[in-house]
Amino acid sequence: MSGDLEIRVSGRSVTTRVVIGGGEADRAETWLAPLAPSACVVVSERNVLAVLGDRVGQALKSAGRSCETYAFAEGEASKSGATITALHEFFSHVGLDRRGVVIAFGGGVVSDVAGFAAATWMRGVRHVNVPTTLEGMIDASIGGKTGINLPTGKNLVGAFHHPVLVVMDPQCLGSLPPRDLRAGLAESVKHAVVFDEAFVTWHEANAGKILALDPPVTEALLRRNAEIKSGVVAADPYEETGVRALLNFGHTIGHAIESASGYGLRHGECVALGMAAACRISVEQSGLAPTEAERIVRLIRLLELPSTLGASVAKAGCVEVDAVMARLASDKKVVQGRARFVLLERIGKACLAEGVSRADVREAVEGVLGV
Ligand SMILES: NC(=O)c1ccc[n+]([C@@H]2O[C@H](COP(=O)([O-])OP(=O)(O)OC[C@H]3O[C@@H](n4cnc5c(N)ncnc54)[C@H](O)[C@@H]3O)[C@@H](O)[C@H]2O)c1
Ligand SMILES: [Zn+2]
Image 1 (cartoon, protein in one colour):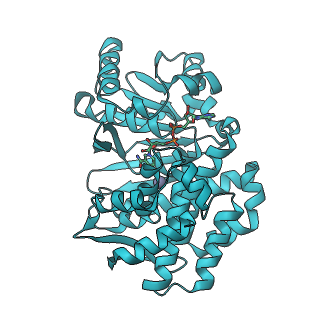
Image 2 (cartoon, rainbow, N blue to C red):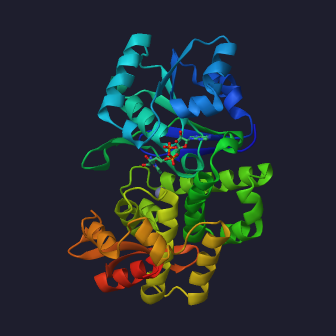
């Protein structure tokens, strides 16, 4: 077992253990046994099971453990109350009691849904995340945010429920479409530029191997990201002190572009555009050196992510500046027409800025949309 780290979530006595290593999905009994569960349920979605097989469920069954697998339809539409109800009925059917464990095997959709079902079943049972996407490994699986969508907005219903264990098996990433792999890398760029300049240099030196999923490089990538995210989460486990807000770098404009594109662009692609825009604003407002902003944009491109859309692509994707600005105005982080942004003072040092004017934001949005 390589890469074994712990996040101590203070206050509510939860410790998340993170295990990283090739083949870990097939060694489920090894990491589940110490939790001594009375019963366990694997929660997944149909596409993940079709592509990867029920590796975790099979591993547990071959070890003689009774374990049931529940799979819902793939996609964001499954992050719904209907899926949660169906899961609770399944938990009831298989007799999952308070000492039972829910294992999420899939991308961010699966960990959000399974985590919320675990948080609300019998007022909270333990859950384990086994992420199968890069977005899931770098971001969604650590931090305890779980939830579902409403027709009026994403992630509106949810709970903080920290997983007891996160198991990352880089071998699961081999089947990921390249576009999804690159999109997940945007979160790694975010962690690096906000928290760790040396990690930026590491990305620059290893970009080719990162994109090729070279095994030692992938493991190092996952490990450093888990360290950074868990450090931030441990400092602010329930998003109360503002430290976690720094993880929103690139996300305010990114979310607005994502929504304006009708979700036609990947989340990570929009975050890359949002980071490029935030860099432009940072040069104006928080003293980021233009050479550092250029370095970040170069890294985004090196990892084959967009730093601008280009007017024709923006039009084809129906991403209009006015639509992005309208979404920003309705963002809950925008107070009285002035957005609250995570900006960079330099690579590795971010700050929260309240006074960014609409005109500056518009200029940055126009810049990344290529208008
Ligand atoms: N809770 C959090 O902190 C947090 C953080 C980031 C994102 N999220 C949520 O995560 C979701 C996005 O996550 P995602 O990008 O993983 O999306 P996803 O879970 O929908 O997975 C994307 C696609 O990849 C497929 N897939 C999964 N694993 C695969 C594999 N190994 N090989 C091939 N295909 C595979 C899935 O079937 C799906 O079609 C959003 O709902 C977002 O809100 C939550
Ligand atoms: Zn994100």
